[in-house]
Image 1 (cartoon, one colour):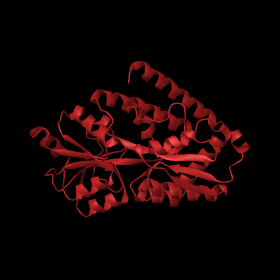
Image 2 (spheres, rainbow, N blue to C red):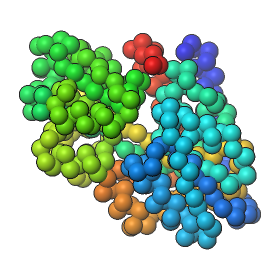
Image 3 (cartoon, one colour):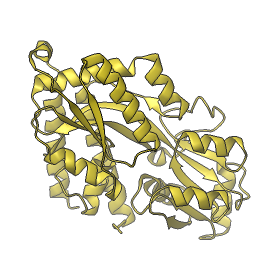
Image 4 (cartoon, rainbow, N blue to C red):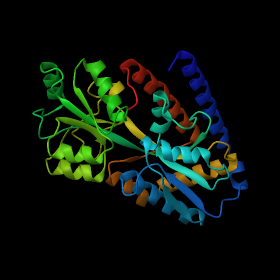
Length: 330
């Protein structure tokens, strides 16, 4: 992506942040009528952690707003199919989306976004960040992160590192460590996380990077996987002995997946503010927070403007990483 497009993106995303700030402009929030039914498009398959969180959030919102809230799973293309459906929905408040921000900050740099993330999507509220764990399998002799680096330097290319796909967040983490630690590993991209996890348990490769989740915790407790480091703003409560990649001296690789709620661009300001307030209220409940923490996901929340700024920052940093590493789409 050339510098002109990058500058355009920065300006557009800055404008988005300012618009989001105006969205939360106070008293107007009470002036907008809620829809009779709210549909939340989840950009991932039913049954996964993100779907479970979205359904728990939907239940809380339904109780708070006294309207039906239904989940519509539209999975595929690393979240782009679901977010494209959000982008093309009417901005009348009847449709929202739940997704990681990757369809907005990764996919566009690879030329595989069916919508314009700078114009067609409006951030409403962040919901959680999902840490990215770097783990050793039974095929690896590395006991910790330092051991992994030592082995990778001693045997360039011998260590196989599995991710959930080409240009996934785990792949970006790998490339940042390639550059920062000056190591060579062999990337093994999968089409999603299911087969990747099955092969990890059977030792088909040495290390993998994947998002935290309930099933993953069970494999760690059973000793089938060894966590070496985590991409997260802070250490996880469930794994306090596992350092973040920032602590280990690799802040550029210290990546986590930020998830949130989005709307089609043009949603009335008052309704956007109402939804932001309701989502923050839901995230403050002990029940929803407990469900997130149980799967090693960390509740976030906050203003729409702050969410938009986080998206803008990741858009720019991911663009630089993808260009520097020469990452191409599948």
